[in-house]
Length: 379
Ligand code: 5AD
Ligand code: FES
Image (cartoon, rainbow, N blue to C red; front, side, top):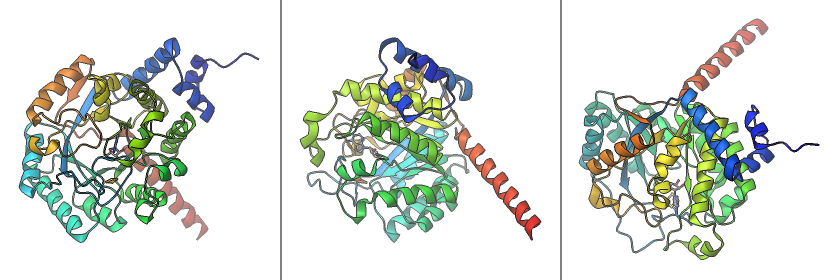
């Protein structure tokens, strides 16, 4: 029997796990075919466009201890910071004045009534200063459903919570083994975000110690089955002060982690044509034009850092994090030029919502209507 070629696989409507593993391992011409297909799909369903989310890393205080992360609680020689409300609002105003459609508020993970109230209050204020025009993505980790709901009601409409790895065994190897780092809770949080009505995003790190190609194929299947609206994936980059550093010798070389990340993005674009996909900053830590390469083969979101410069050095999730010396203005002009290099166009003044989300919500509504009708007939 003749072996299925990569071209045959790319012509299919859906991929088996085995297909995904083959796509992840393509080289040479086959790799080019994969990237050509994903670029075509991006062009057809999204256009050759990029939307900005001004990223405000408002605090590096974290209550958790993920074994890979450069701001984990256990790191003692790190200056912890917390932007004042005024500093956060000034950064949001910068985004608004520069016609970024949206901002993303990100921080270490804390659960407390203080944090809940504070974020809620800031959300209202950001909506106010932008006449309701700035879109807001939150990325502040696992929280109770009622907390997510309050923030949603206050104006956040997208939430990013990476699953980090969809393989529970691998998840347990890269997190402490305790209740605070529970895989099931991560899934429950993602589900409640979806139920509340957020555009829900997740993603994984690529090139983690112990991670296999099989795991990565599983991650893609997980994201498709979870029916996510947004995806943020980036290469794992070791951080010298974290526990995972002892496994550095068994890691893939950085260029291979980079290459696998591009393939994950390309395959994701083919599998979920209308979702938003971020070109992660971590790509640029490996290749100076890493994010632009991701834009070419499928990504459509970039998150320029608009955190006030003096704090950036303290939000180093991994070593060699780029742009920590720049100001928000530097990041913008630099990124715009770079995006143009990727033959794409930055769209200003639009939210750039996930088209997938609209369809998902419409589908869910229609489903509910059908259910009510059927109930009516029964009753
Ligand atoms: N390398 C790459 N990405 C990392 N993150 C945290 N630590 C690292 C690291 N060492 C990512 C996680 C997290 C996101 C905010 O940053 O995926 O969800
Ligand atoms: Fe902060 Fe993982 S170390 S959320």
